[in-house]
Length: 160
View (cartoon, rainbow, N blue to C red):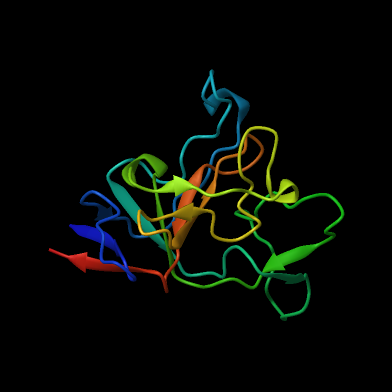
């Protein structure tokens, strides 16, 4: 089992989690959405996590900048006017169920990075540890995936 901690203050961020072999496919089918929040199901189930080997999140660069790389199935819903972009963010972020990180709080989101139902995740880290360090990015708008990415530089894992 693995527990994630804040790299700045060493606060425990998650409960014990079991690693999945790969990032699960995300369902965007209307029938799978929560009937009250309209959110898609979480990318990973509670009590588990997956490591995303691909670049994820901010910053973004124009698509086609790197040969052979595309936005893929897991691209974020980017604000209108951004054009065709791909992530140039960090690789190897841990994706967890948002409810498995109960002590994090949502920081202010700039309007372009806020969807109708929640944060788009396009503005970079938006979840703070109790020490105030931004350590994760929550994606919780009804139009995209529902997941929490732990920043691989600001968070560390301990396998017990």
